[in-house]
Image (tube, rainbow, N blue to C red; front, side):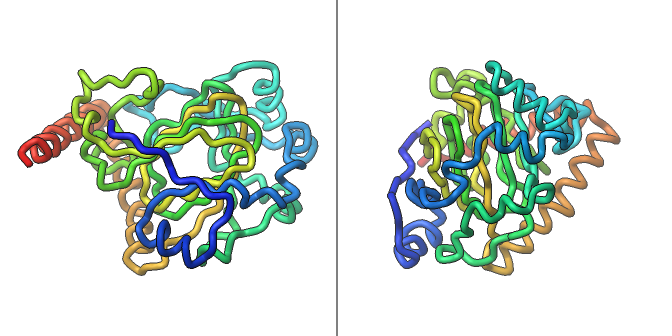
Length: 293
């Protein structure tokens, strides 16, 4: 892959943010955005466990989805407290995503400030928590609603790989999904370019996200995240300001996901292998176009 680091700033003015990142749809790390939030110091494993430890959550392992796995289907359900104990006692390759902890503990919304001065259209009913043990992986995908994301890391570190949506063919996007057929696990040390040769030509951004750092990820960006240590992050989502962006997000949620799940139910083995075949064919064509010129 052709890699570059994500830009980093301590703070940024609204005008500079819109001109250099929001409008060009370029990612950015803002290191100082959360520094004055109560959450910066207050949000810990014990704090969360004391508030919502009895809530049941879906957890996800590192295995790629099989032929019969529906979109967003959890691998197991346990209490949040049990999960946090597992994370605290040692490496555990399980993660939680899209956990709206704030529905159960609305007082937590007093612990941070929405960055309305940078972007309008935040979905303020849906701040989401993402939790992972050391070694857990969020496989390459892009968010199905196409929202812009402000992703703030609390505790621990994670390695992030981002690609603009126009790189989708080079990273083997499967039809009717937001997923890549390629395996990016451990990509920083090894990347299977023999099986997936088009990956050599994909342009990507990377960083290691640490405590209190906020990553702006424009809507539709592909992302793969590996938890280097146990930790958690909060995502604040903002709808695309254009009508076409909102309609595209609606199509993804109501149309694309439903069709993919229907085909998984009707012909799981055929659909599983067909998606990968098409991804290979499109990647080969995209690679030939690049090499031709």
